[in-house]
Length: 588
Image 1 (cartoon, one colour):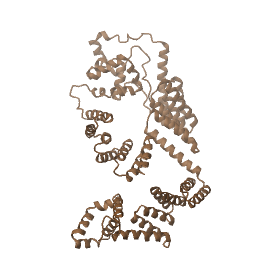
Image 2 (image 1 turned 90 degrees about the vertical axis):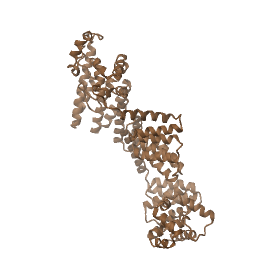
Image 3 (image 1 turned 135 degrees about the vertical axis):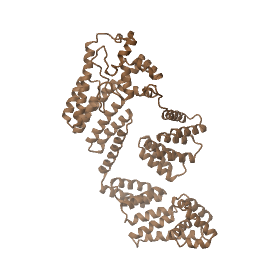
Image 4 (image 1 turned 135 degrees about the horizontal axis):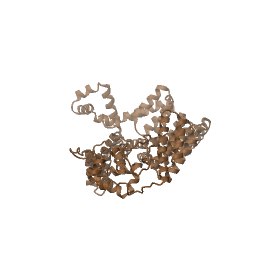
């Protein structure tokens, strides 16, 4: 059974359903609490949910159970990284590499942890050092590559050379302040805006130039440049590398982009005011002026979504995806368009099948960019689809027919066929306790005790007064030799149906088995089996680890008078009886 729960957990993890994965791994751990792989897998699931404290606890348990397994230390290091305990992470990865020196995952994790530790312990800049030194650290190239306004500069060798020079010595920044590309990069690295740009959610526009003038005037560096020019007069004719006469077509293109940006900003302002019609007009104008920025389309799609014009929203999203791939736009922008399309499809869904294209669209969005919001929308859509399928499938009349078919097969002792019909009955009417009770009986005949117990408990959940449910559950527990639990179940059933013969017989049989252990009438094989089973019971484990109960057991052996006093306590007496029934304590 633990392997089955583990397989379900692995499947859920692969599908990105980390909550479900953690739940399945927990079920597996309950069935096999000493399996180190299960704790490792659940640690990974918790880490994926950003529950790093729980991930750390499971990783520590993994290492405790299997100290010579490299992956356990990999889990431990990852959890420490998530909690920003970089020193502990380094130690964990190093310990793992002592066991598996060639493990690439451990090597990679150690490198990341050491880099993070170095960053976290980096000293402050000394007096006189460049105030921009932190901006040109190891993450500089990643930040420049991820920003649309600086990404294309990385294809220009002279720009790369300048940035490498600045990275080696941030004080060299003053040598390149005249280059507008460096100013743009500095703005990205410091999260500053040296030029007027929109600040809305989709603002991924190329930087607007100042009308294409070859003089390249820059307000940000105007005060510092005269001194530089006196010292370096030979660099005054900076624009010489470019043609002095900018083509009219290029000027018009830059002007259109600038106007499009202003229209987008106006649209954003109108959107915030809930003036959707005005916002649509501005975004439409921006699209007409510049068809190379798909954020105009995704913004207009967002307005259509708010207005309930879902088909128009979907059309804009499709255009944005198509155009974005032609332009090789940022994958996050393409994912955003797909997510909005999926949201519109969900809004339009009226049946379970209507959710299928929405689910497919969300999955495509996640292949472009794994965004938590998109993942949540996918999970919600899948749940809504499942709920609708159940509603659409609901038919009590057919459920009764399937249950009767199952009863017939049960009488013929064709239990697998009976299970199939009872399962169909449950699908048709999930609120029918009789179908769960009957299927529990089939599972009991087939020896599938965990499944039988689960069905019996579901039966009682639906109808706590249903006597048959208690007899089913008690019978399963009796077959599992959990006589104390079975007795409690039968007694609970008798509260609702005091004269029920099956329940009364169940109580009799349980008491007989419990007294058998009390009298010491168990054979050595039976005693050994019962003790082994009892030691897996969490309740028995808690009793044996209770300091008070341990002293009571010592007193029973060494101090009979004190033991007699203990037996006056009903709680202690009840626990002693459980230990006797389990075969842990024997009365002679």
